[in-house]
Length: 183
Picture 1 (spheres, rainbow, N blue to C red):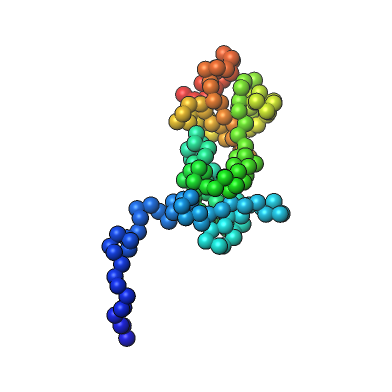
Picture 2: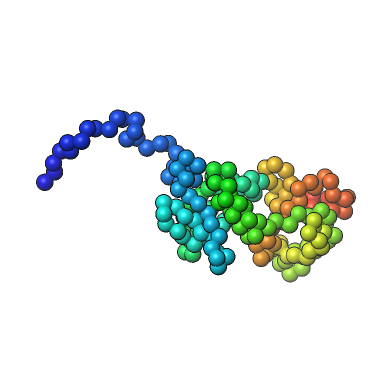
């Protein structure tokens, strides 16, 4: 049996849901419901509305905006929360998340390309990065991708990322190799 409520009706504006998504609401500093913590065992945890969930961090595109669109996922790879911008997090959570992103999303910056040779469905690269000399492989159909703010991103067969931030600033040999793979 349904009975009428004796409580006064709420004003119309407060009963409407905001246009923001639930995920955006989870990440706002006003509600402060999302915290990101590092456990004593080194694992990353998202604490949302009192629930603590072990998560891994996954940076979403665009790669050119490293502090935007970060997905925290549970052990079944289900998204726990999508963070539109790290700036909405409290300073402690932001610091923990920035360190986690640096650990998993390390992008090597290419300064010079020594060689790039096609060998049996694989492309072998020898490059000089800011972090030192590297050798890596890409599939023949994995081409350098231009990023919106300039530069090119290269993903090797093991998932590591290499970034060429300023192709015009590289030596002529490096430019010839890179541009030969772009067009």
